[in-house]
Length: 341
Image (cartoon, rainbow, N blue to C red):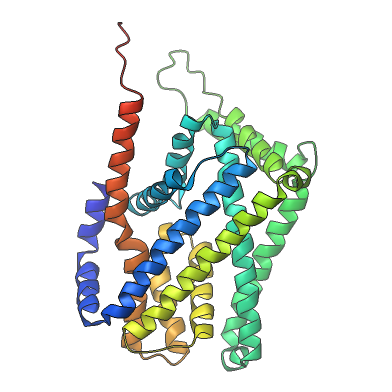
């Protein structure tokens, strides 16, 4: 239902994308589709190696369809990626992974993503410096300042988590979160009015942060961790090639370096924006960045919408079908049992 509502609200955009498809070069669009399918395969490889860090072996055949489902849920239920992660954590229970371990897996996946993106952003900054783009567009420096700000916070957090005991900040967070739940989320079914103890959940998440990013633990499974990091790089690279191929499809060719910088800066905007899925921010940011590189407004907008179509709209029906298939398979594996029997 959420997906149908989203399509209804964005119907004019879908119709415009259809018109762009009809006017674009079919050969390059096929190349884009192949690139996107490969990118989902890279996502499955990332999941596999992250799970290996958690001493769990799950095959690519099992994980590949799940990647589409996670993407579908994140799009149909915009929640900054939590809806897809919640499904995956629940899905992994069938392999014996606990909720706490599932949260740790999600944290590792995010860590490899941010690390890979950091590599791409630094490479983009070097490209802008060498090509004189920073001199032509001084406003691009604000991207670098913002990146340095968030990078310093992330690195500082990593070293703080190396402490064996919970620090004052962690204890303060747990107490504050527990106080919030205690005051605002009373258990309505409890006649005595006792609050559900959510402090244990907050403490579990913080402990998973510490355990997951412990240097000693990461060293033990370093090979799988660095492989997961490598696949995140390949996922980002596939997205850049998608944008590059789309410039040929709309007959407004851009250089690979321009595609690299444009996608990286746009990705950064969508990551720091407090908007689920980066909707609006992604489209507006990419269009403006392409225009700043000399791409005419109409082809720039066409490339942006087509990229959104291949990364947002087209995977939705595939993810919906696979989601129903996975639910049906789970029902067959774990049929409902009548409590009275």
